[in-house]
Length: 287
Length: 290
Ligand SMILES: Nc1ncnc2c1ncn2[C@@H]1O[C@H](COP(=O)(O)OP(=O)(O)OP(=O)(O)O)[C@@H](O)[C@H]1O
Ligand SMILES: Nc1ncnc2c1ncn2[C@@H]1O[C@H](COP(=O)(O)OP(=O)(O)OP(=O)(O)O)[C@@H](O)[C@H]1O
Ligand SMILES: [Mg+2]
Ligand SMILES: [Mg+2]
View 1: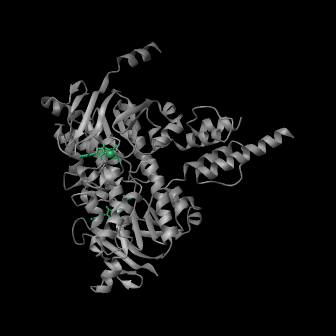
View 2: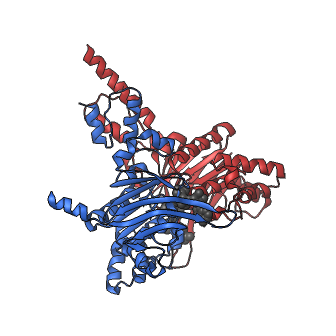
View 3: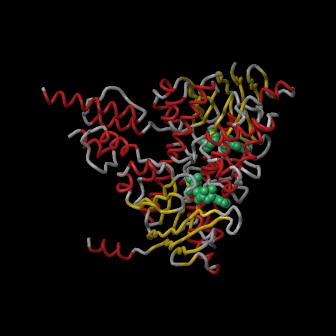
């Protein structure tokens, strides 16, 4: 117990944003403030989900975690390093495995194997290790059969799997996943999320997952909700999803079980607060 | 009238190391005035299949007919028949190309030779359809939008052409929950009110059950099964091999039944599920009162 507490105290912020503002096309007629004074921190080894409606600023925020975008004002620190310090870019990018929203933007090589190896090579991993990592990453996303295929000729879901493999193969300290499962079938989605969960659990890799699937969001330790470029809510999935009304008002939703509990309560049934799992619902209804 | 595929096969990159047979001998009918869903595992050939429907990909073997016309012949009627089919791609970015959102959406209608007035009206109507506010987005570059906004713009571009057959490749992927609900509702309304034939690819059994009259399941380039969603989804093996999963609501109902709750029937949708649970609670109360 004490040991557990100590570890909790020692956990450092892996990512910290302080009053981070992002302005696209700054100084031009069409300038647009996509992030507005965002302050947040994500601990080493934490699994965080970011939710928000289309255009709320999720992808913009994710690109700051990899120093692909620069703050208009405010700061973003990754592993203690300031993303606006050009000398630190390489160090920062070495630690982050990134999966972009559109996998086409990520394809680099002409052969799947080389594509997945690009990240590890780029961070200077030993060739013998690279081979091993590429093989296990392709296995993790169930794409071994396609290792000699051309990535740009794959189906939508297959491309998404390759992008995930590329990020995993880097063996990064942190994975930033921007809607990594949007094009996958439900079974594929479950497989990918369980791989991610395992990386987090077994290797303490920090996970930041952006998604529109509320059931997937519930897997995280913590949920951050964005709206119009601002962080508007933060909490455990249970805290966030017990307030179904405000989630819906924002254009978001809650996981199916929480929704069922919410509707039953709304219709006057006697249901306790904060139901998140099928087991809890069964217990509440079948006493 | 309908779209018909007769023994259609398709091979990508024949004679190269990347040769791949993506469709094998597929025959099917997509009837006019219906909503048809296509499901199947990653790589099963869904996107390849729908790209046959407007001649974007030509079959390596077999025939595709739209309203009785072989669309892959080099004739004026074939070109006209192809135009009856409007297609929204899996990755919306692939179909955006103009300088502004407005010009992008106007491109199709303008090509159809409509009047400027009519084009303007259609652009506004289509943007309204996908919930992109005209004043905010019309003059923006389509490449400076968020992922979900790009998808909406791409859908609007096809909606504006009012095609007879509307084909959508995973239309709600990347949309936020409200956007998803709203788009599905409006697609259904397009069908119900304007009689537009809808063909859509989806991985969501609940959406398919709610919208479609007919579902086609693809497996490794072959048509595994077709029929009404209720029938097709009866077979759990089919569901499994298509990479699908039973809707969460039906799983919850099963768990409640197993735990001894007196629920009659099954439910895919939350609305139905909640009603079933309430009915069961009422019965339980009555029993206790007696
Ligand atoms: N390159 C760009 N230039 C100008 N504005 C942009 C650019 N990219 C995004 N935006 C705008 O910034 C806002 C935030 O975009 P962002 O991509 O971060 O949203 P998001 O939360 O990821 O949305 P989605 O769920 O649709 O992916 C949006 O309103 C978008 O239109
Ligand atoms: N341009 C291409 N060249 C070669 N092979 C291709 C090409 N496009 C797709 N394929 C292959 O054809 C098969 C079918 O691809 P298709 O895109 O039709 O799948 P899908 O069912 O739409 O999958 P997803 O759900 O992942 O989008 C896949 O194995 C894919 O790798
Ligand atoms: Mg995004
Ligand atoms: Mg596809």
